[in-house]
Length: 308
Image 1 (cartoon, helix red, strand yellow):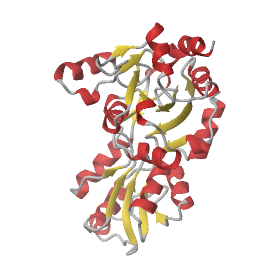
Image 2 (image 1 turned 30 degrees about the horizontal axis):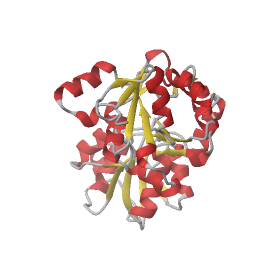
Image 3 (image 1 turned 90 degrees about the vertical axis):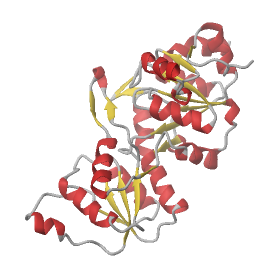
Image 4 (image 1 turned 30 degrees about the vertical axis):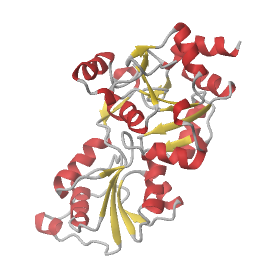
């Protein structure tokens, strides 16, 4: 059956059962889809483990750069999900892959980012500097004359709780060289937490550096296809039997559209059904999911029926 003929269809009942039967590989975003902060979305672990138990492959695609693959697998395990590090494709890991294998970086990275990004760069054999606090010293003339490492060939911006004026200034100095790569892990503006709370996301930091440098960063995370490409390269999949499940229209759903796979919006995170309908009405169909559910747990009855 042609399930892509119409967009933004609620998945339930028999349609859910047929949909799951047509899927071999499920790509899940994490924040806002499987958990919020440090709490699993109710029923999400049972769904993911049930999908794997029924022979489907599951991968975790996250724009969040604050954890390594191993740290994500640990968190998933703590929250009740079955997960291996090799199933996780986060922007910390994929940024390191990009620099090593695609850009073939010869030199150092000036890093605006946390420990996970540093660890993934290190694991990929990429020397870097800049991690940690960078307190303000001196005055404007001192800032303009900051020393720089001549071996730096790339600036990488990820989530950094120590983000500061001094870091932006150092990044600006490096990025004035047009041959210096400018990479952002992602541009998500906010991170959803428990109880509907949010905190500023990496996109806020990226915009600050872009504004200073008069340059646009190359973005590794969704909606760009690189995370998906990494899954395809390392694990292989059939796009016609793959679905991207996410909570953000501008990252998860847009990436799925770009990659030619089906998309499922869950309403436990960032975007609302009203947002999706507004895009549909305006003709911006790449931002409209093929299907939606209130929560990924809504698919549990269909999974149980499929297994029986």
